[in-house]
Length: 237
Image 1: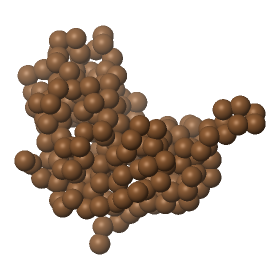
Image 2 (image 1 turned 180 degrees about the vertical axis):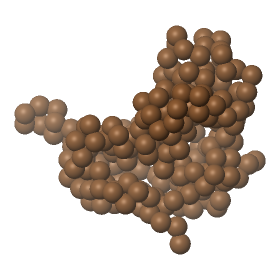
Image 3 (image 1 turned 120 degrees about the vertical axis):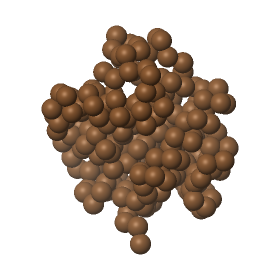
């Protein structure tokens, strides 16, 4: 049986709007994500999807409750410790790619590895090129973001997210800024990573087609899980 790679237990997230007013985003949520799953998190705007994703990735902390990543409780870690965990175990992809405009595609993909310093500079460059090959950008190594289409920029961002071989790949509306063809290409890439590398993928999305093609769909309403269903193993259309 697959191991739980992410576990949330009794998670509550409140926002302090003023000294006397608090808004509850997530009232009480428990959840297990298993190794090798491809999960889509859906729900209306304001349902707590992105907050949940950021809590999973250690970018936000629950007001109450606990979070485990790869068997380690991360809720009590300070920011310096969490930064190390994020760099080593979590790959983030956002709606906007956040590539550094003055650097080439290969340099952007190298950045997380340079920070981690697990490999030498030559190995890092070779791995960055291999990752760009994997996402179909083998002829775009030296291109800067301004010389790439939106879909190509997002594929560079995915390659960058994979740089340190993350335990979990997290996407926050990764196709939300793309046309339908580019969005489909990004989905196919996620599905292939999940299928061929057993990469755990968790994506927040408004895209119904994307959500229905993932292996598991979790639907949130008012910070609560309204439904949690298996779609069958994610596969190429």
